[in-house]
Image (cartoon, rainbow, N blue to C red; front, side):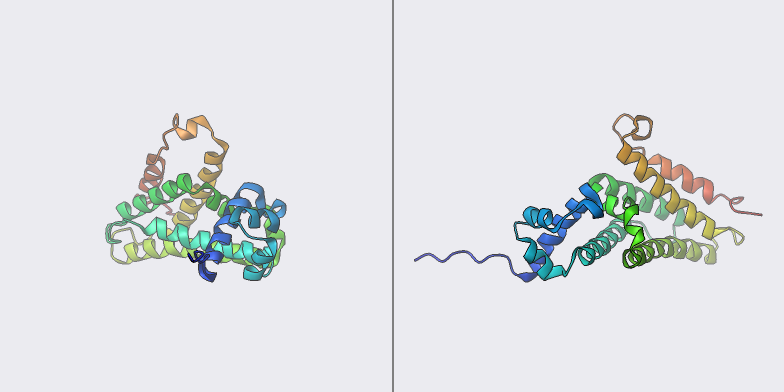
Length: 207
């Protein structure tokens, strides 16, 4: 008698639920998403969803952490050594925008869920995500300045803030589908290059 194939193990099942949650949260937002919908997308019951994640808030927080880790890994993927700071920042920026186009639901969770900020636990997770991204960029700039690749009086805090702000703003433009931004369907990666060239010029950030 043939054996019935074993179903997914606990870790694989948890991963399935998390992936389904990211899709549903990205499409509907935190407030409108339900455990029933997430379970249906994952092929499990809502009870199974809660078995693995406790409640919807904890599932969203886990989804947020997963998206942040995934984004950080994508930004670092294929980047040149940090001793070539301008090329490194440009590649990191391009990796971000490639991730934006390839993973719209994850980016929506990261940057497009303002209704969740009323919840202090979720707000704390968002702060951790944004602080980690900021420190990632800031540490690269600080290292380059210490090595003499950037002027000593360059205001690197402001540059890091501008770069993250630019990324945040352009993610909105992308989701709105604005034609001049999309460049007729071809994403204009060079926009980030121009910004980095401008911000890291010798006069940038000086009082």
